[in-house]
Length: 427
Image 1: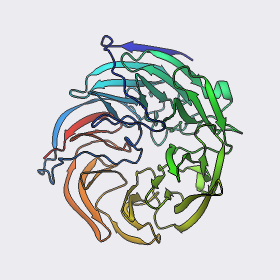
Image 2 (image 1 turned 135 degrees about the vertical axis):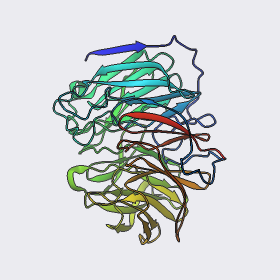
Image 3 (image 1 turned 180 degrees about the vertical axis):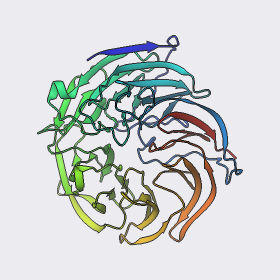
Image 4 (image 1 turned 60 degrees about the vertical axis):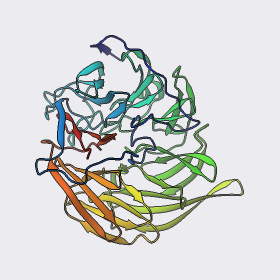
């Protein structure tokens, strides 16, 4: 495996951040993993403006980046993301490398890059090249998964490679058809990723050494990234697999429960959403699968699952879903138009649909939804069970954008398949 590290700025002393027993904490407005502090695309930021001028929010900076769908992490004045150089939509000329990059959050300038070989042969990038996954920051390290199913541990200050694994070569993991999309997750000193294969659908590695801690589960893995939940005091790892939802013990990989959720092509993509208030797990997929609400409880030392409802009227394809009270909101649609949709989580009834945006990613902060659709339209909206009100809207990106936005304080970071940019959403 050919690797190359490019250090553009000298090493800077890193400041340790602490990880709790499971999950991550972030200092202030840091966004250190897929989906933010709780992997649910909800930010505690305040002070957002209630509208923008017709020209849109103030652009702080923009720069060229490259292909890929990796979202943007923020920690202590730095950004971390991944891309494929060039941004050329052609198999003939497409770069054969991927890059993990650290940028200055205030200017977008590169601090360091770690590049590695990522050939496109045997991978279908017709819908956009990888890398698709988002890195993970824990303490002084950055963990990143490549589109070729590799895991890298890097020094956060310099980008220096500390250890790595090639899951296809080392474990016989299946080659991902469209490129691996699993964003790694931290738990109790381990980093957890999906592998694929018999008795190794999921695996955990020691964060410091890279040693295998456990592997478990079987069946086809999907592009969706796992989440951590708490079921009546028991930590559980939720994996949205190719044809089912699986609950696992994050300490040893033991399967605790499964619930079927079949979709065409095994493409369950949208991240599951957990509500501790009513113990309901929401999953949604396109490709004929629809949405399910699954209630989870502990009884006699086992997890009991109960499907509350199923609806084929809400089919979230690649977007994020936001749970607010008794309703969930997401961009529903696959091959045709996609509408922002509200679903009653108690009954599965569709409360409303709105055509104001194309297929979109949602992020919630300060009582508002920030909407970024695939056509590069940014929106600020309020939602309720009664409907949606658009407060502001602007065209901010020129190329196809499937990457969820990131909010740090009042600064929004976005990217499409060629550029990355920062905007001030403050009042």
